[in-house]
Image (tube, rainbow, N blue to C red; front, top):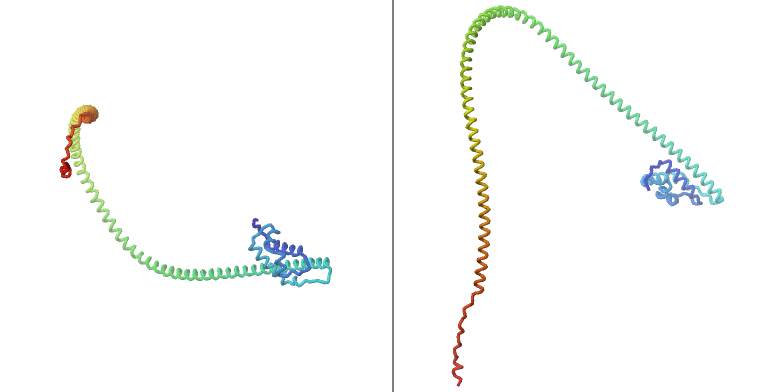
Amino acid sequence: MSRLAATPDQIRAAVLAMLTEAGDAAPPTAARFRRVVSVRKLRARLGGGDPATLSRTLNAIEAEVVRAGLAELALPEIPVEIAEQMRALWQAAVAVQLDEVVRLKREAQSAVEAAQAARAEAELRVELLRQELTETRQALATRDTELAEARAAQAAAVARADEQAARRGELEAALATAQERATTGERTHAEAVVTIQARYEGLSKQLLQETAHQRDAVQAERAQLAAQLKFAERRLAALEQERARLDADLASERAARQTAAGEASALKAVTASQRAQLDELLRATLAAAPKPRVPKSTPKPTAKRAAKP
């Protein structure tokens, strides 16, 4: 049977219905409760359910029903029909009361859980506010330190600015001197450029002449290399023809060698056949030849035979 999920209210209603349906004169004691209601019967009535969950809920309902005074209901002098109706009414009232008690317990438990959750949330908020306050204090301390450092850096920057102003005057004087030196250097450089340009023109003419001589030499060497290349091509063609002729001779030699090897193999086979025939002929000749007769030896008379008359 499949385990269907049943709520505690459904389980309690089913248990009270089973107790009501089993209405007899005996009060619902713990033993009678277990005899009327069991996990197997409860699962069969609900159409399934987890046995462990049903067992725990059944124990709680048994404790509530038995301890609530339902077991003390005994009306022996009242007629059976009236007693059953009163018992059913009593059980219904107890069930309603139990449901009310359970509902109140649940509401109280929910209120407690909500209060605990609110308290935990408040404590968490307080802790977060404490952390934020600590972080803010640390940030303020860091900011004060940075401000003090910035003030010290500003004072140092002012001092450096004064030093740089003095240094600037020195640098301006040095710049004027450097400009004068640069002007003199430019004149010297222009004169050197003119001299170098004249020298460059002479070297350029010399380089052009040397380049022309090298071009002529390269052309002559190229012509010589072209002639050598043609001779090498003719030589290579002759070598290729010689190689083709040698390949043809080698192929014919291989064919002749293979033919000779086949003939040798055939000759070996014929020789082996003739040798086998010769061996058979020798064996047949030896088998047909007459065997030589061996003379029989006469026995010598012994001493006992000589003694006889």
